[in-house]
Length: 359
Image (cartoon, one colour):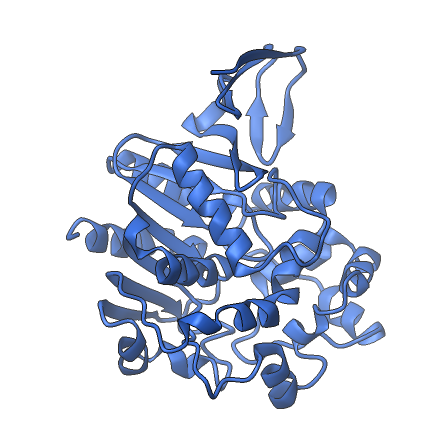
C-alpha cells in the first residue's frame, strides 16, 4: 500500500468554503490513492477530499452512525446542508455532504460533456467506496434530487431510503422528447434552462452583473411560477434589484456562497443543464423502469418547479406513486419556496428523521 506523507506549510486564519482554518500545519496521508485530512476544523464539521471515479471529490461530514448522503443543487455546494449536518450528527447519524463534480472544492472537468447523470452517479459510488459505505440513506435537493433519482434507478442496492426535495421523478418513456426541446417548445428560449445551454454565454452575463447579485437573487427570489431569464438590459434589471434577505439567510451565510463562487464560477453547475438531453438519451435502457426504493418527497408550496405547468404535476402523490411504488408520502409545505431545507430547516429535519428511523 502506498503511504505518502504530504506536508502543507502553516497558513493564517482564512475562510475557505466557510471553513475557519486554524494556524497549524496540515498533515495528510495518502492511503490507497485517497488523501485523508487530519486538519482540525471548527464547528465539528470535518472536511476531506477523496478520489472517486477518477476525480477529487470534497466531502463535509459530521457525526458517527448510519450514513446519510446529502446531495446539493444549483447554485450551491455542501454548505446548502449546514443545518442538516449538525442536526443529524446530534441524532446519531454520520451526515456526509459532498461538493458534486463542478462545484465547490471538488474537481470541475473542463469537458462540458463530462457532466451526465452517469458521470455524477459514478462519482457517488466512488464516494461510497472511499468512505466504506455499503448502503446509505440519501437526501437530495434540486439537481441533487435529480441525481438521487438516478442513483436509486441505477444502483438501488446502495440506497436504504430516499428523501427528495423539490424535484420529482420524471420517468423515461418511449413517448418522451428530449427535455430541453420540450421546455423550449412550451416556454420559449428565455426559459432559464434554455438560457443555460450555450457554454459561456450566461456566465458572461452573470459576470457583468456580479456574482453577489446573481446568487442573492437565485437564493432568495425565485418565483412561484415558470422562471425566465431575459436577455440584455432586462436581465440586469431583473437580477440587480434591492433584496432584503429573509430570516433564514444571513449576510454572513450569503458571503459564504459569494466567496465560493468567486473562486469557482458557475460553469460546473451549469454543465448539468447542458447535459440534460444527453442524460435523457443515455437512459434509454431504463425506459419504463421504476424507482424501487422507500421514498418520501417534500416540496414547498411556492417552489418554482412545483408551480411550473408540466413539471409540478409530476409531484402529485398518485402520479409519482405509479413510478415510485415505495413512495410513502408527498409533503407540500405551506408558504415555503424552493430552498426548503434552509427555509424550514427544523421541520424538514423532523420529516427526514421520522421517515428514516422507520427503515
